[in-house]
Every structure is written in C-alpha cells, then in structure tokens.
Length: 335
Ligand code: XIL
Image (cartoon, rainbow, N blue to C red):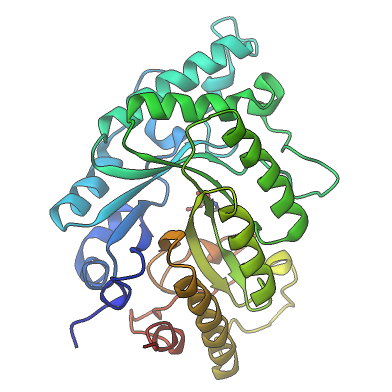
C-alpha cells in the first residue's frame, strides 16, 4: 500500500511535519515524501537562526527546506516571525549598548519580517506571525517578555501588519500552546477578538497541540475549536505530539533508575488519545486547514530534551525505526 497520511486525509486538510535540514536525506526523506504534504522548519526560520546579526541573514537551512518542499510539491508553513525565545540579543540593544526604544524595536521587527516574508513570497502559504504571548498564569494576561516590556501589546498588531504588507496572499496565524485550557483559551480569545475588531489582518489561530495522554479531554478540545472559530478564524494544529508523560512532569519527576520504556499499555493509551483527537479534527474539517506533527518519528523528538534533561519520549506516529505505531493505524482507521 503506497498511501500515506496525506492521502487518507486528502479531502480533510494537509498533514504536515516539522523538520531540520538533516532530515531531508535518506530514510527520513522517504518517509516525509510518502506521509506528509506540508512542512514546517523546526528552527531554521526563527529570528535568531535566520538573522543572527543585524542585517546579516543566514538563509542556507531555511532555503534547503523550502527547496525540498517545492521540489516535492509539499506546502510550506512559516514558523515564526516573532517569539520571546530564540530572539537574538542584538534585537533589543542599541548602538549605545542600552535597551532600544519602542520605535527602534518596531522598526527592527518590520525590517526582519519584511525581509523574511519577501524571500519566500508565493512559496510559504501560511505564517505563524506571533508565537506564545499569553502567560500560563491565569492571574496574568500577556507574557512579560522583552517584546512586551518595550512595546506593550502593540508589537503583536504591528507584526501582522508588516507580514501582510510583505505578502498579502499569505495566511497569517497567531500560534500558542495549552490553548484548550479554559482560562488560557479565554485570554487568547480576548486577544484575537481584539485584533479582529481592530481590523488587523489575521486569518487564524495555530493551536500547537503539545499534548499528553491526559490532555486535552474531548470536551476541552471541542470547546476550543468552537470558541476560536466562532469569530470567523480558521484553525491549524501546528505542533502535534502526544507525550507519554504528563506535561508538567515530562522529565523533572523522573525517579532514579526508572526505565524509559514504551510499554504496550502506553502504546494502547496513546493510540486511543490520537484516535479521539483525529475523530474530532475530521468533524471540524470546515474550519481546520492544517494538522502538523512536531518532528517525524520517535527516533528524535524535541521532547527528548525538554524541559530539563534527556528522558526518552515516544510522542509521534512512527517509531524509532520509522515504522507506523498502533496510533498510526488508529489515525487512518475511518470511513
Ligand atoms: C522547539 C524546537 O523543536 C527545538 O529544537 C528548539 O530547541 C526549541 O524550540 N513551541 C514552538 C516551537 O513554537 O518553535 C518549539 O520548537 C516547541 C514549542
């Protein structure tokens, strides 16, 4: 059987994967071509990697991903244009060594976004314009990042405007995690509603979907999709994985000597959780415009290193030998 995820989901939405340039050769490249029809750069298009020094752009890695996608007829999601992490230090420091003013920072943001969006104009069909600005703490609203300290919330609106002027055809997304937790969901909703009401060019919301066997529940997932789409936004699940450890304790709570084993019981639970979320995705195919996995297989996932030290995780549909797992068969098991 030559069919992959992308073929089973042809009439629903593109199925994507996050990659680094090293994944674009050998067996991983074969798997990408068979299974996926959308691609995201895991790190190569972020601000630090792509503009390490002011005005000096490093295109090699991002270009290699874009060229691979174009050659193979794969759509490209851009990730991301503004984030509190992986921002180079120079961005916030002026020629005098002091912190820059809001005016200078917005000009730098504009230059960055204009240059990057322009380079891949017509090739990148959707951009994560702003990533993770809402705090996890329900008693706070915005995250207290350097961007926020210097610009207040204006950088968010401005980033969308700059991206839209650089490529009016690209779909523009706000992207965040834990977006199904009711309190965070409502704060994200409020931010996005505000942007819409002001006429800011935003097409949709990216729900990262770094999930676990416990989260989200079916009720939370449905509520989130309905809430965000109720204001006319499209939804993309931009960074799907299903950690076998609860989110808050991924590796911190590892007991000495505890095995990092992917037991049949865990495989079963994970398959059930994947089956549940994909059933809901299919029901909402009219508002969901992309579902992307964060990494290719359990051979390597960012969760092996995150949040603290290495604890092997098994969050994806393919195992360390790139073979489909139980969860894979569940995801394609529908009529
Ligand atoms: C992660 C990458 O996977 C890692 O390689 C890197 O060290 C840190 O960033 N939310 C996001 C992604 O929006 O950009 C992050 O990617 C994972 C969490």
